[in-house]
Image (cartoon, rainbow, N blue to C red; front, side):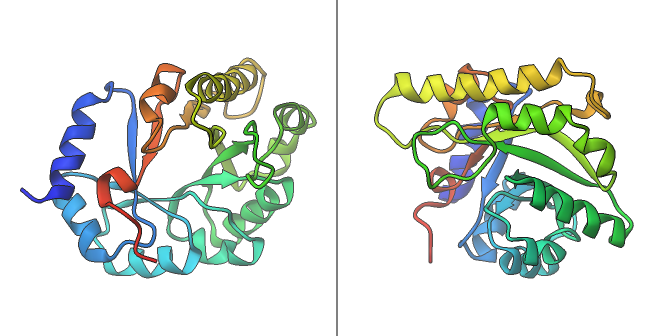
Length: 223
């Protein structure tokens, strides 16, 4: 059994049954993805539109592709045909662009709304209150080409478990606030995507049910 298979088996053996593993395959070759695929992994995350489109065209049809990186509006048309879930909707403009492109393509695209709680200003996303206000003002009624499945977020990049846990709890609290609202498609709002290679166990403890793991599975990225 190769190392990628071993790592996937090890990670999955520690996950609660309701937690989805997204194998972050960005910058890794198709051969590495196929090793993970042969180990039973079917959900993969990419962060570049062109790379996603190329891999989706050449790899098995039953792979579920998630787009997890910052998505520029001029790349939405490349992503919508291939992504089962766009995890990184970080602005109203992007949400409306995905809606328009999805309707043009005759489909409804599942998305997560990215929440920003981390210390770093460089991270993208809505502030929690900003997101609540956007939803409260009826954005979902105006965007029938998207289905909001939940939220995604990242913790601060610090060596401090207490701070990381506080960030995860803030993301989860934002999810719970939105879940309590009377929104369209409320029954479909059920995903909290948070946690990566270094902190996914803590994220699960704080209420994550979807984790995004790359380095632990595939090793260092091949840029």
